[in-house]
Image (cartoon, rainbow, N blue to C red):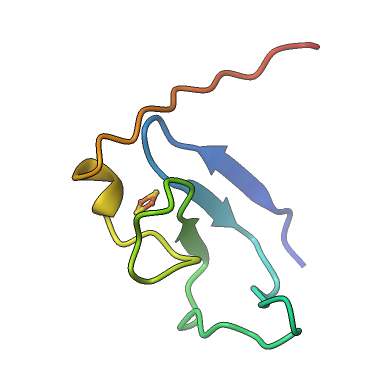
Length: 70
Ligand code: FES
């Protein structure tokens, strides 16, 4: 299996590459259409959660997070 990479986008979703499966709390898999990279909503405004549908652009989601050594 490929390494998993999560990229925190400025004012946007979490891009996940190299994932295995995305499940709900009951263990049911969401359809990901065979994509290698998915975008997970972190603004809460998507109508297609847990996936990003671009709604973060309309809700003024403001999150610019940078990694630190701490
Ligand atoms: S992060 Fe894109 S819709 Fe929420």
